[in-house]
Image (cartoon, rainbow over all chains, first blue to last red; front, top):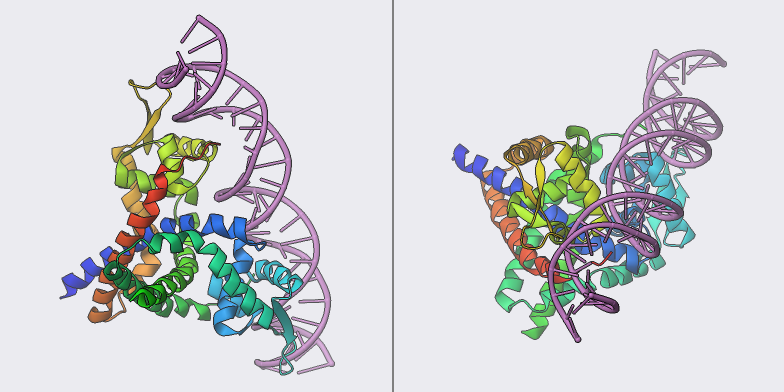
Length: 158
Length: 158
DNA sequence: GAAAATAGTTATACTTTTGTAACCATTTTT
DNA sequence: AAAAATGGTTACAAAAGTATAACTATTTTC
């Protein structure tokens, strides 16, 4: 039983290492050509689309980026009116970034644009394969989120 | 039925867009800190580990990078004796890059290093979840490979 | 055999990402 | 109230990724 687990872990790692460049290939180029945001800002917008409000530090932890980098990325999003800075009245050091209605709408539009090529390819799959893909990707997303998200507690100081 | 497909496609795209930054977070930092290769060279080594031999153009297509960039990445791998250039006797314009024994061994070592943190987290999962993760990630990898790999035919001219 | 196409390299400029360190404002600790 | 800790910002340097264009060497095409 313990042995089974080790094999499963190895399989998962092999698969994730293979999936990584495939996703990079599928999205990175489209992000550049079809949006006026850089990938970093788009990722920030993405997690704000999920959480709606996060402090600068929380964003940094979620994306494993130093806070100093987040500042610039958020500035870009503010320039596009996609997010807003809100100073926390309870602790005025904290900057809570929250996504605007425009930000939510723009993010959905950009998702459409970015995934156009992928969508066309998915449309060619047969219903069964598509169903398996849908279920499997949901599992991978959920489990990965649950184990990677732990790191949010770790503080990045710089 | 057609409606079901559309929903599945949307689900897949949503999930992949969420998985992308999670994998980036899990691997990118580890690649920098635990190897002396840049991520680009590692990805090249990764696909050579799968295919064993590829021409410069094929590598470029597989990773959606211009050939001019591949040259530098392969140069680094050659400097580490992980791959070799072989001039095709049938068509002397073509450079076939093939992975060496050292390259295969190094790649496996680096995979270990890079995935250490992830492995520790996976070890905390219960056997059932791990099993689901293993199966699901295999499906995602296989399907994604089958649909993304098509692009290998598209030639990148620059 | 000349012209066009192909495979790869070199060079250059630019953007993005990453890593530090110093710094300010606010809050917490003592 | 002074010292330490925390949350963010600013500034700077280095590494990596991206996009082009010009170029050489071969092969194909006509």
